[in-house]
Amino acid sequence: MRDARRITAIIADDEPRLAHYLRERLAALWPELVVAGIAANGPEAKALIDAEGPDIAFLDIRMPGMTGLEVAQSTPADTHVVFVSAYDQYAIAAFERAAADYLLKPVTDERLAQTVQRLRARLEAPAPARDVAATLATLRELLPQLGGAAGGERLAWIRASAGAQVRLIAVDDVAYFQSNDKYTSVFTADGEALIRTPLRELLDQLDPARFWQVHRGTVVNVAQVAATHRDVAGRVTLTLKARPESVAVSRAFSHRFKQM
Image (cartoon, rainbow, N blue to C red; front, side):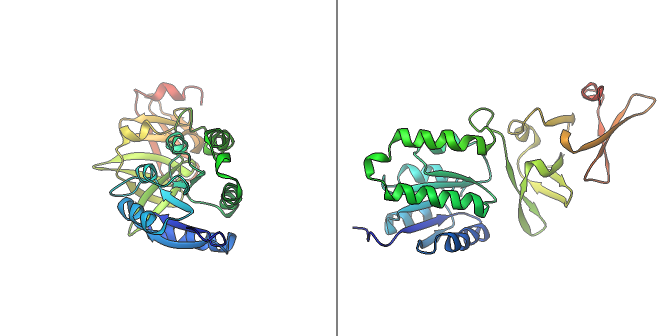
């Protein structure tokens, strides 16, 4: 039987730095919350939940072994699940599992404070109040913050490798993507990073109104285009706001820039 005065949580994330950061911010925003453990993958998360019986589970969605969504399927009904992800396209699936909240990385203190408030209210409410209707109400409240996940299920954040580090990059900050052998290069004002997602697969997750394919191996963020240039032969190149290099547009896609 749980101690009514002791609220416990577990954190599961395959990025240790992000897991410990979340633990630190929770300690600052909710000092009485006891983090009973941190798991580095899905099976560890399931085992930790089984062992600790926490009140709250903060679950990353993309984890080795089992996803956070799979872990949530076997989580006790009285454990409140908060999904944490760099991707907004899992929001509907998360709330189908009666998630208490859905946080997009990187998590800000302001957004985490909202989660803490929501969790406090759920923990204080009698069990019958935590039903499907309440979950749907939460979903309606949160979807605008998730960039319209219910409609387009668009990518909001990218986890990319830059040297020995792994960075979380906001899609809005990307100048362009370029196919690079087995990887895709991500170019921002800060430099170049790599992701393993093929460009064709990435296109399905990007907002087509904002990210235009300009070459067989290049996709540009239109909001990052400073100017277009057309030479006497009709070839189009793009000058970018945050990058020094120009991006060539193939003839197959040059018609998209006639009005620019």
